[in-house]
Length: 470
Image (tube, rainbow, N blue to C red):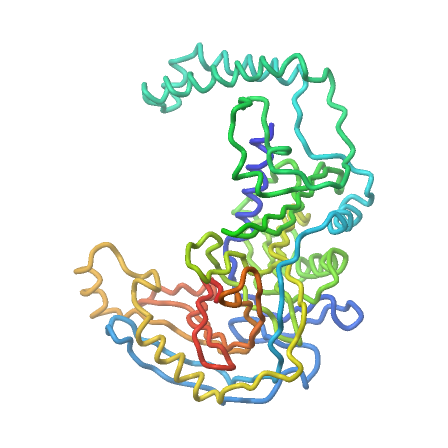
């Protein structure tokens, strides 16, 4: 049933997004230099921004920094221990969100399924499926004690039985039109409103799909390495927020064994995904993070423009702020379980529409560092770091003995996508300096992920609100 299908997509998406700033220890650039992947060892806590040739590293704008200062509130110490900072003269770029097209889906079909001869991914129920679904609900309704044993309260049992009876009525109304055998429908390569894919035989005809139908999708199914899989592409371009994404997901959920060792090494996982990446898009990408959980690898890539990677961090996609981007940052992520790619997600593809004729004029790094320091002194608190508890007295006592620290161990130049203010959907990629590291208190360190403490526009010294995207 479609409920299971969309749960599978949501789970895979969540797995790809979890731990999105895990720290890699190599530079990997894919789709560059005749499609060869480049790997350079690095001792930095975040992968190097520029890899390929020496000229790409840019000029040194600051020698190694060792600094320490307190926040204005005095509850956080900011410690800076970072290597020398390099920067390139690069232009500001104009960009727009790129809708996922049927041609994009066809390309992924050829990569994963080896053919464009595919069927729509719609789980229409046969008469036999409906009979089984009705019987299951009837058994649940008649077994009140069983529901009670499952932990339902009496009130919850009443509402659950009412829901099951409503679903039985809907299933019966769909029985006559249901096929004896599911043959499937070959895709017409058209995007359809979400309700076309999501409507379920258990739902009534009076359900309101107006909100969901602002998203149009194309979904196809095929076989990948002997297993059923599907590809789903979606576009939503409305005043409140945008969605442009594409997923590849195995139909059957693959279990993650957190106690197992990975079947393939980190290097093999990167090699596998970088090779697949070359076939999926024509863009240049760089590894942003590599995360391992038992038999699972999660690898995320970010676009590289002018030898600078683009910043990837969390963003609110439905903010009511008048200037908010409401469009997540572009990334392409893989999940590998037991040595097999189980899901791929391409989020918010962007298209560069033009570039300034001249490289942007960069502020002296001393000005950038002053802007960073002023921001951290005012904005960096136990609460902003997620280190505050509900007990203010406990926080004050703990802070006296074990100071909360924001540890900045990496400063680098990157591109950051920002929304152009007072525009509908215009974006720019601006060069920025990203101050990253981890929070700590006593022996406790949040160093399993990278915290982007501060992002400073390299051209004017303003602080970019990456959560809102401007």
